[in-house]
Image (cartoon, rainbow, N blue to C red; front, side, top):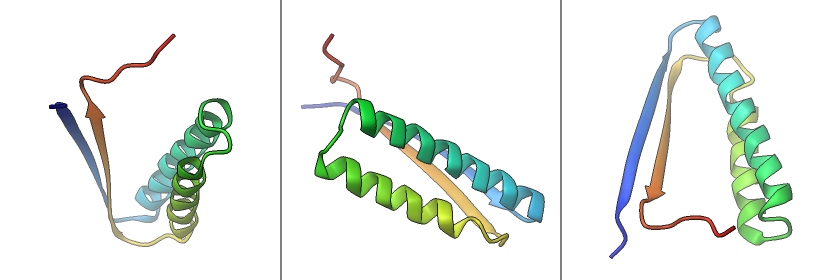
Length: 83
């Protein structure tokens, strides 16, 4: 049975400055996923789906609005990368 660790970070967006910061966070995540997709998952369906989802989030955050951004990371503790 695989063990999963779960981490969450939440950001309250109450001003234009907060909104800009949330947009920058989503841009950085999008860029990271895009680069990973090119080097690790190139051509796979899950890479395209994940990139499309983050592009939608990034684009939605372009307009300054109030709200909350929550990022959740679930990590399989038993999985590792092969060299």
